[in-house]
Image 1 (cartoon, rainbow, N blue to C red):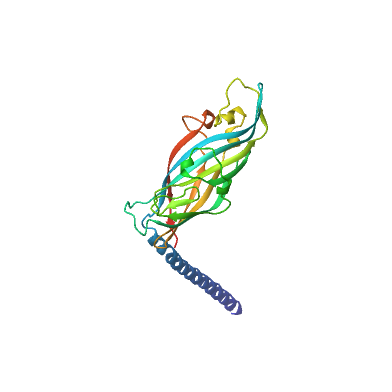
Image 2: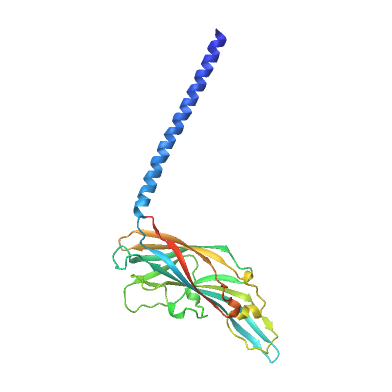
Length: 265
């Protein structure tokens, strides 16, 4: 009888443990479901319609250098640098501007390099759209960590500093610059004229995969309803297309994209 009681007691304890475990798991499932619903449903409600997106990016990639010495038999350059200008066009589906689809605040943050070039020193700059595709570099426009834009509605704005029209009239323009790819490099073939463009990479025996780069950054928007949006932009620098490469002088590319801003607040 004692043996039967021990077995019965053991089975009862095991059964009770199983029931408690099942009840605990069911309770956690209900709590988790409720938590997810409380989190996801408001997020889905906020993002049922797209307010802002980046559907097109225009790229221009080329090179430049500073000459150091030149003789009849050779030519020495310093600071061979490759640059890619990028124009990001922020769109809104509603062509009629209102408080929801106009800017109150815009900034860029969290610049992350997924692939860095094996030659050179990559940096990111703000650029005046009027200087797009020009090789000029302005150190005062260097982006260190965060880039905040001044928002304006004035007809004539100073685009030499980071500025966006509140009605989305101008794109975000950035310039990626990879400097010091080659320094004190001597070109001995002086039979051909030196062209200050992407062909310098070929003349200086720089392989494209040595200057390839991939990076990303976050763009934050606050509209005039104080709603906050964010998207992450991923960039794979275009150094060649099906038609040509930067070795031919430059590469221009209009790329269709689908960077959707989601509202998080």
